[in-house]
Image (cartoon, rainbow, N blue to C red; front, side, top):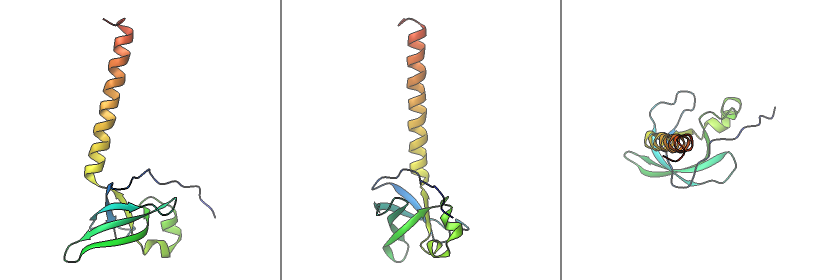
Length: 112
């Protein structure tokens, strides 16, 4: 069964959390996107305490339906955006909404 799925847009250098077990999403490790080799996978550079930086190839987003269907994919772990990244996205959304609101107000006030 083929599922039409597209992960969220991610850029090189974005901070993410890497989870070893996609089923539990426990004990996240901080990582950075260092490559996008496929349309649904990323390569992460993850900081592992006591070890240092470890490359994690072929990692899929936590909500990728293929993680439930394919045990081999789960062995690579999964990723989600870090809280810092989510905070930045929320801030950008609020700023955009404020700009739209001000623009609408200026139009209804006739530029006053």
